[in-house]
Image (cartoon, rainbow, N blue to C red; front, side):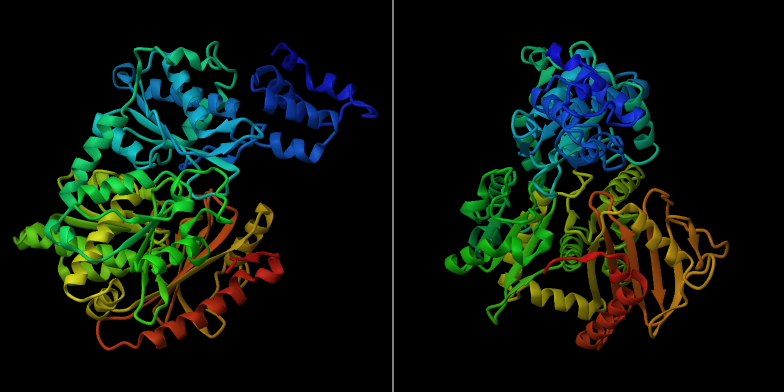
Length: 624
């Protein structure tokens, strides 16, 4: 591979008619370093080709800025360059992470780390999750640090489970979850079994910058093959995980007898064998798998986006199979099996796909009811908690108010809920459940992250139990709303790739009624309060300062309206989207859900027209 040591400048001059240097000094420096360090022939050759073609635009995309290491770790398309996921950026990121961990843990060489991966692959650049995981393992083992490397694909929640279970210092999962097929990611867990939160992200990013040159053995992943530092936790973790999961089976006799049939789709991801094993652990008959989507396939051939949150488009094959097999309920995991979508056939013959908030209500009710049956002592309530993110439905708060347990709201993302749950558990509290509206559920706190495997089997047991009372999931959801108050929600997004436009839109919201004045109205709706977690402003607080943590790197503004509506507008941490979340909450009693939905639709239309202004900012709406 010595050929890759030529400089960018020499490659450029070799290009016919290139006319000398074709890139600015910084790009030239980056590409020169890249060709010196990259030993992957596919990515190295693609960079040389771009230089010879004088393709400045593509070079800037590849080398303009390094992937940002945030609290979700890394996520980007696979390909050449410092802005992409590839062998060299994986080596660099792991070297930085390794040096950071060495500073944080004096016993790192005794405890070690866990690494696993999904089934993603990108033949054009030679990148795939398994290879990235092996290169990451090589980095640690070359420094004398034990690595628990899964020998085969696993669901993402198995990594935080392993960190906690084996008391390791950290975990890495190579996955881009439900992102488009060209993407991959590098998700990091801390010793507490939760995703990292600030300041770890910034300090790891700094350590990566200080450790860019590959270490002597960085590219030789054969060193791990016979290393005494390499362990495969697959068999033991699979066994222990399902043993722990059995503790959340409340109605084994019902499960054995149930006539409710389930269809399951893995959406070409990793979930199939694990969900089958979970059903077995609960004595449920195995769900019927969608054959075309059962096995891992990095091309995701049957779906445009491998994201069950997109609803009916992703579930088309599941609907057909369920109709054919007379199954009433569909369970759908995303490709790394940390999230779950559920659909139920209604008496009318129509399929209802539950929103993340509706499933959150059902799980919250189920886990509280099941726990209460085993814990009759009312004093236990004072140490019992449920959590949800600030953009999720407030239904758990309503249940908590009536039933007497505690509810807490966190910032968006399971990194916040996982870390808060761990704090509470260390204080001797009992965390029953946490969820976010993006179909993420922590039903069993032995995993401090969302877990689509446990959520799938727990929802199957809930449906089986309800069937013994002649109730469907939809009927039970209605009963929850009647008892605790209707919570009507609506969420969507606009696609926006330009960061300048994103900044303009949010600056407009901050200066809507003149400089530094947020909106007082939105169409006919009066704004009663504003909270801006980018700047730390909250006009409901006496000192006008927000209580929840502030993050300048993400845009997030929440508006409260005099009609009881709440709407949050925010940027996504992993996708080029501006998302909005809205909710109308009614007190328990005889509210008219149809009237509430109509009112919420009108509020959302006003928010789109006056606040988001997609035409002005040239943003594309969500498809379908």
